Length: 366
Image (cartoon, rainbow, N blue to C red; front, side, top):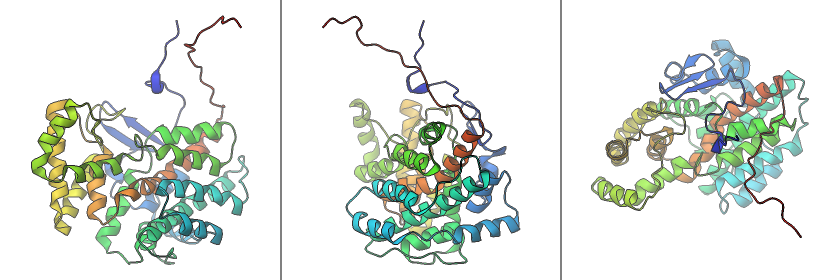
């Protein structure tokens, strides 16, 4: 008897030491650390955990910051491509192609050489940030902005995106958002990266494929859809009638439920707190209050909890980030996990080759 697991539900396809998603208990573990322990740390500290196996101490944090600072520069041809296309293309399409172009300007790493792989990973992490920031800058009518030499990763990402030196609170929020999105088990984009890697293709190809997977509205595009949904609803008074109509017409409500979590997404509570804080800070509490009411009604009517995408939408919006840039920011964070998974896959590789269940006709006659 053939058992089909549609969408690979419940199928274990490999081992990992990088992250564990415990759906029953609502826990997310990063290389042994509960997400609640590391959510307040900097991008550099947790990035170091994924690439080098330990949370960065003070010296390692500074060293990684400077290492990344030396890698933000992108080739003029890539910068020109962004300037020519970012205004008219979906930002994720521009990002996907620009990251693919990086392979023109660097030698492919030897997949048996860990030092070369880590060098490529650091390049990809820095340059994906710079490319994403350049896309944001061009879409705001500015030219790409060069990084500041002594800024942290989060500081530089915000500076390259806006041209403004952001305050400590904004930087801290971005740090937390990046850490929360850094890895999440064998999600669709990470699994895509590992599948491509399993054929012994190169790291940039695997990352480009992962970006293509993240682009989909059922994965990385969900928080953009959440913000568009909130703007469509318009006011807190409209939420219940809008939701009742959406449910009666079987419309998908974005930002609720999760393929793995059977309880609250542990990342969501951190973003909910940030959404409230930024709403109060900017005088735009409307979006948090709307989100809070919609969350309550969805649990009451459907028994569904908010996921990481739900409150990241209103958090980013009150930070001044436009919805079409939410998914590229997701990529800026998740590329750390992708690169770590690519290197882990190569340590004990076997090409991915699942079976399919053929349901077509047989014994046709010409």
